[in-house]
Length: 561
Figure 1 (spheres, one colour):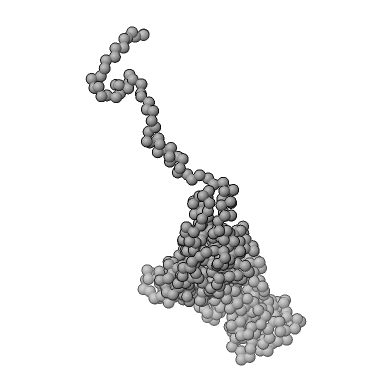
Figure 2 (figure 1 turned 45 degrees about the vertical axis):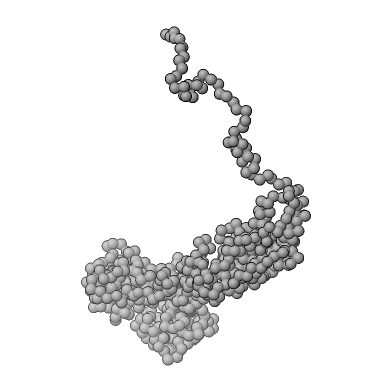
């Protein structure tokens, strides 16, 4: 419902209360501007310099003698010409004279702002710390290393210099006026040979104020090199041994030279390293392991030389203590390259680890009789019709059974952990840096010429011998070794220089190795034990004597030493 009321105003008790006074009186407007308003107006009008019109800059530049000389120097690249630039020289202990503009000598018309002059000087980098040093030692050369960028639209040295100055990691640059190319470097420069430079006609190199003490800069001692892990080497700052320069961090960091790409062993710079054919990368030679702390290949620890009294003394995973020495557990193959026990190998070698009273069921692909356990597992190594991965031997009967499956490829029921009277020999891993023996599915997996895929492994084709130091298959060897590559149902004739009878193929080609004359191949008859030795290589024979099909025989070609 509406209310009826009457407003009665009464003055407050505090006559000094402005709220009470203002509520009834309008404010008085002063006729004079306040100090605050004056200051704000001043800042607004004067804080930002007035813009210069291009025409004003152009007209003033034409009247300025110093700027005209700078323009001439930029266009002709003759910075040292007295006619172009008035200069003074500042000697640096390691560098040619530095050209420095004299502050305050440039005079332009009153229409050109001092700020514009300063900006131009920074852009051209010819004053104070913005100085660029022409480095004639590097004329007509460029350095392929330490490059931060390459620009192909740089019109002047000044523009290239400005790009380098604005880049926090740039310490030197190369400009080629003929190609308008500018290259920025994270390093300084010493000499073209020292920096691995290549020839490029017209290239001119300049050092910035950040160049001294950087990688590549001339030095007298290590104190002259202000880079983490940097040293003075042969008169120039360089990274310490086993270190590479990281342009992103400006520091020398430990490098892994082992993983370099390669085509042949000589491409690998690390001592005792070889080119691994399966990856085309460098790796430590067989029997050595990479030690990252010193960036070297060192002899790998041999598991079998580790003495023990219990399993806890054997630190390698899947190894056990047996008869006072550490060995790989049942079913595992020793990988000497990595000093570890593996379930499978990429390459199988010619050594074995035996386990007494252990057998294999359901994998007796080939059964022979051998007089000793060594003859048994040597038969496994020399197999040509399959990749033999383990062999079991019964000493009482001489039975020798060959299997093409690793222990963990067998079903659980075929792994006989208790099989009295039998000893199973598990084949250890071989040298993975060599293509010979690598696992394959087809010839395309054996990428090197004259290699073929046979029975799941890469071997040299018929008539070829394996040359280990170059990882290739060759027709002839300068020196022959004591290993062989066999080919089943292949033979030769008209070269039976020595004929004998042996009980095994292994014994046949071992006889070839010890023969008084130079025996280059041996053929063995699998049924009657006949062994023929030949002093000629396959390609020394006439085509008619090369029997690519000769059932019942296996020929073994002797590899290079």
